[in-house]
Amino acid sequence: MGKGGDKGGKGKGKGKGGKKGGKRQVVVEPHMRHAGVFISKKDKEQSLLTLNMVPGVSVYGEKRISVGAPAEEEEKKDGEEEKEKAPDKEYRVWNPFRSKLAAAIVGGIGNCWVQPGSKVLYLGAASGTTVSHVSDVVGPEGWVYAVEFSHRSGRDLVEMSKKRANIVPIVEDARYPLKYRMLVPMVDAIFMDVAQPDQARILAHNASYFLKNGGHYMVSNKANCIDSTLDAAAVFADEVAKMKKDKLKPQEQITLEPFERDHAVVVGIYRPVKKEKKGDEEAPAKKRKKEE
Image 1: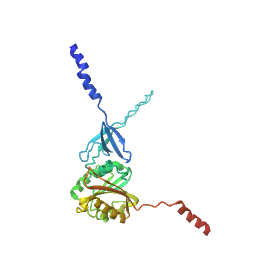
Image 2: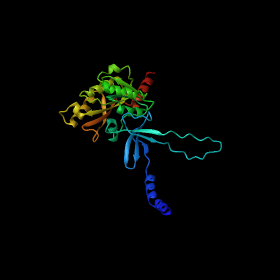
Image 3: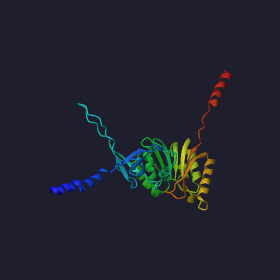
Image 4: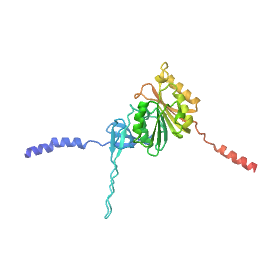
């Protein structure tokens, strides 16, 4: 019995204990560029995350990660009640192979303009996979107006939005924004993923009704859906030229390889607001003085 105890202590017990003790916890950090987006780190693996607005619920079977708040190491004073431990935060893994917005973020887009507290018009919402993550990012102070033409996908979108108060599902054709003009206010950003040959026109039409001056847009271009006879680079260049004509000034463009083939995302600004120069501000004041 004594020998068995010694062997277990020295060999098997020590080896197994070493493995368990060496297991690292997941570390979650805010994304350096994109507010409301997070990154999990475990050993050499990294994943894109959003803070789950509905803890305990997955939207499309995605993995969820719960991270406890760090414990405060303060000494308890006499007569002082114990502080309640902060609840764990739950994050949802955002798969770039299932979301073009996630693919653009992982690909290094400078700014996607989907931020906490912002109002976003999402064209081509499908069943709500990416919309649910946008809902997480904008948070309870923001809004997502999700437009989807397909009634089948629209049913899933409506069902998902029942648990997320900041999503307004709209089952309509994005080519006719007048049909939902009473539901959508002026927004800060438009994200578009409709895969239509006239998608530049659809974007401009919606921007004219709902996107504020100086607001931003992000559009996913699929070359084959726009023109299958041309090279992908030529199609993307042609789409950018169309946008410029409609006061949609492109600022950045990246391809979505290796997550999506022949896809590019364009980010830009709508009707940029010109900043007044000091000379321009002083001129009216001088004119008034002369008149006096």
